[in-house]
Image (spheres, rainbow, N blue to C red):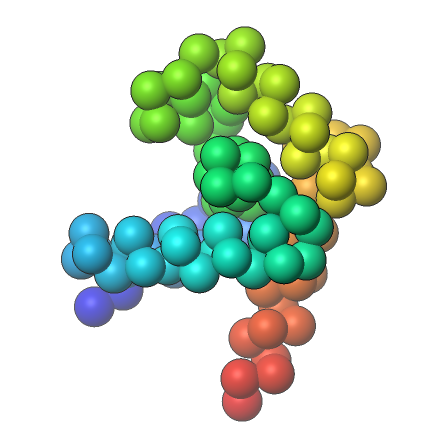
Length: 106
């Protein structure tokens, strides 16, 4: 079963699995895709995924048990590797990428 949440950042809609094991698989697949496309590390992928889901940097840091300073450093690396200049640009990039993947699945 999937739970859909609407994000108020960049008009994103996300669909997250309810089952924790499925959620881990989803995070792993996202991490692989981000590594393949942009060269992101797993930690950077977590930051990108959180931003893409409309989460604040503080919330992301709390969820992964890292300091906001560490999250900010990782975000700067994500922005450089994705050639974006803001969290909004990153969220839009990820939304557009997700749309292309979703439309290719049909």
